Amino acid sequence: MTRRMNSGRAGCGESRTSGSASGPGKRTRPKGQHRAPVRLNVVLCRTRQRAEQARERVAAILDPLGLRLHPNKTRLVSLARGRDGFDFLGFHHRLVESWRWRGRYYLNKWPSDRAIASIRAKVRERTDRRYVSAPTDVVVGYLNPVLRGWGNYFRHGNSTRKLNAVDSDVHQRLARLASIKHGLRGINWDGRFNYRWLQSLGVHKLAGTVGRRAAAHA
Figure 1 (cartoon, rainbow, N blue to C red):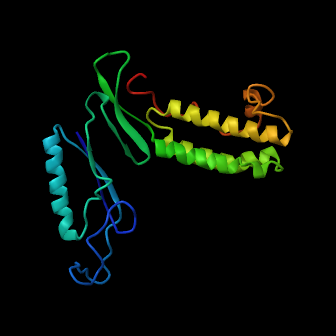
Figure 2: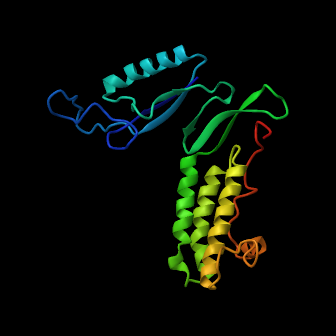
Figure 3: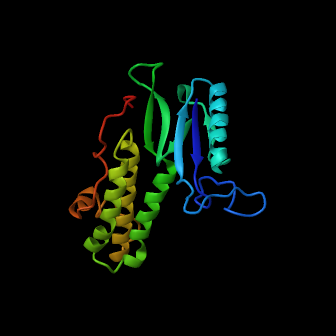
C-alpha cells in the first residue's frame, strides 16, 4: 500500500488550510507566522488498514496547524503486482514484473502522462506554423533549451521509451514545419526530412540520456 498525502497553503491547488487568519470560526495565526509551504509525501504501508491509520494520524497532526489533507489529491493505491501506480514529482511510479525473473516485481518510474503532455505542448508551441518564415536554426535554438531542461530532470529511472517518444514527436513537428516552408504536402519525415536531416540540425536528443538501466529489465 502506498499513501500519498498533500498539505500546504491555501490557493496553491495542493491543499487548503482551515481558513484565513480572522473571522467567525477561523483559526488565528500570530503576526509574522506564515502558512507552511506545499508538501508532497508518499507513505508506504504493508496493508490497507495501516495506510488508513496513517492517513488518520497525519490528519490529526495537521489539524492543530490549521492544515488539512487535500481530499482530491490524497488517495490510497495498491502497488501489489503492478495493480496500480501513482504520480509523484512528475514521475509515474509502478511495480513492473521482471521479464528475466517472472514473479518478481520491481518499482519503476518514468515521466507521468501529465509531464509528457506538458513537454509536447511546449514543442508544439515552439514549432508552430507561425515560425515557418524563421530560419530552421533559429527554431531549433528556441526549442533546445526546453528539451534539455526537461530531459535533464526526467533522464532517470525507466524513462527510455517515453524519451524516445518525445524525440519522435520533435522530429515530426520539425519535419512538418519544414514541409510547410518548402510548400510540400504531408510531413516527409521518412524522406526529405529524415533522421539524418534531423541530426544535421543539432536538435537536442533525449534518447540515450537515461542515467541508469531499468530495474525490471524491461
